[in-house]
Amino acid sequence: MKMIKVVYSHDHVKHIPKHEIDKGKFIENYDKSERIERIREKLIVHEMGDFVEPHDFPISYLYTVHSPVYIEWLKNKAMSLKKNDEYFPEVFGYDRCFDTGTPIMRNTFEQAWLSAKMALTGAKLILEDEDFVYCLCRPPGHHANSLSCGGYCYFNNAALAAFYILKEGFDVAILDLDFHHFNGTQDIFYASNLLTISIHGHPNWAYPWISGFEWENGEDEGLGRNINIPLEKGTKIDEYLKSLELALSEIENYDPDFLIVSLGFDTHEDDPQGGFSLKTDDYESIGKMLGETDYPLLFIQEGGYNPEANANAALKFFKGVLR
Image 1 (cartoon, rainbow, N blue to C red):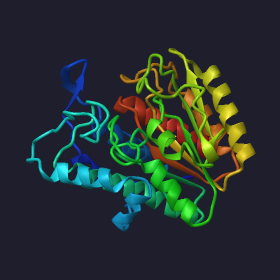
Image 2 (cartoon, one colour):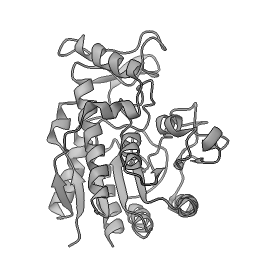
Image 3 (cartoon, rainbow, N blue to C red):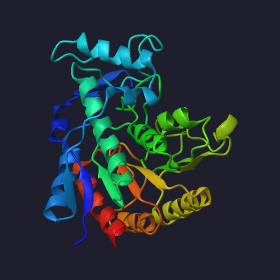
Image 4 (cartoon, one colour):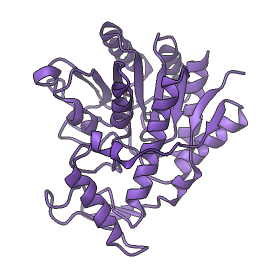
């Protein structure tokens, strides 16, 4: 039985956001530990995961992606809170958070740093000749930009992994398959010649609403290097695979040494935060297309908020990758 190297820490369960503000009302936060734990359990039962703990790294790695102003704000804000407090932004711009769904808690900084270390560990392992590495990151990262958090994300895990690979002298591309547009990743690399591609729900109706349009294609050195493929409500597997084929063609033309895949299973039809109509068995076809590429693949977990749908989709996806 083929196995995939999985970077995982049980300490992610200490990240316990309770609320978010939606349409002016407090609701239950969707980023629950069960969404990761069910994936872990499923991979163990099917003997598909070779699990490793995240390595330690100098905290200076955070500054390759995030500004000192933001890092200090997040650290100081977290330290200022009592154990059960949740802080939501009061003044956008002063507070370094761009939405009301991403609470700051006393342990937020350390939990976000742990998630970032999972991604950095994955980058290290992929450089050590692993073909496939899967980082069970939580909290997710692709909405966080250099200056602010949002969308349940505090540090941009995929961007941190990319810079780790770049510093070793290799080329890398990022493909985001989460249901939501990777606005943070786009912002970070918008003027860079690193290729970034996102397949996502159209911003006319899907979060984050302010980015993810086709015309956002980079600037300066990055002109043409940022590609958005927004899809409509109810998108099914045939249309999705056409978009993925288009994305992989662009990646083949770019020809990186490594490919980072920001992986979200909120594209599943049963996800409470999504809007596509992908079924569980569809993920095997998606995984197969990625597994047939010529690049070592670093998968970084982003969204997916139905624990059971997550687990079943992940199992099918990695069966496809490992075929």
